[in-house]
Amino acid sequence: MPKLERRSAQRFPIERALRLRSFNRQGIQQTGQGRTINISSTGILFATDQPLVPGRRVEVTVSWPAQLNETCGLQFVARGRVVRVEPGRAALEIQQHEFRTAPAGLNAARRPN
Image 1 (cartoon, rainbow, N blue to C red):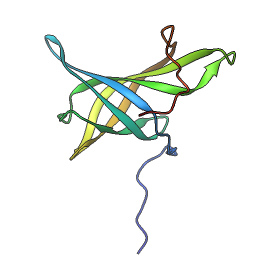
Image 2 (image 1 turned 180 degrees about the vertical axis):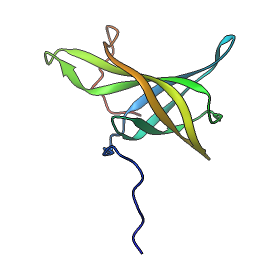
Image 3 (image 1 turned 60 degrees about the vertical axis):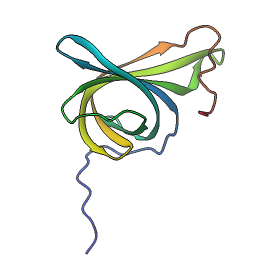
Image 4 (image 1 turned 90 degrees about the horizontal axis):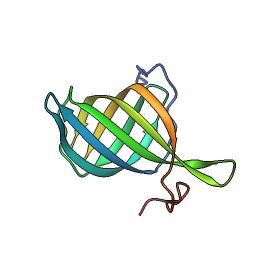
């Protein structure tokens, strides 16, 4: 029997470097790095070097593969909550997002290490 797809948004296999910050009521609790595995309009699945807790508020900054006017690197910044964790991986439900220009000297189109 085929597995039913519960997700309403199409996922895209985009592998990019990311930085994350998780928050508690007092502010930033932890920071870390990782890489995206796939992205949709409603969520991000990513590999991470940090153990995360379901329900935790997280902000991820992803080096975006496109550039603004073919000269300025972009970053995709998403905020939301962790909805699933597995060893070395977590899924984020996107609640807010924006694109920002990358800081000078960073090439957002660079492949992750």
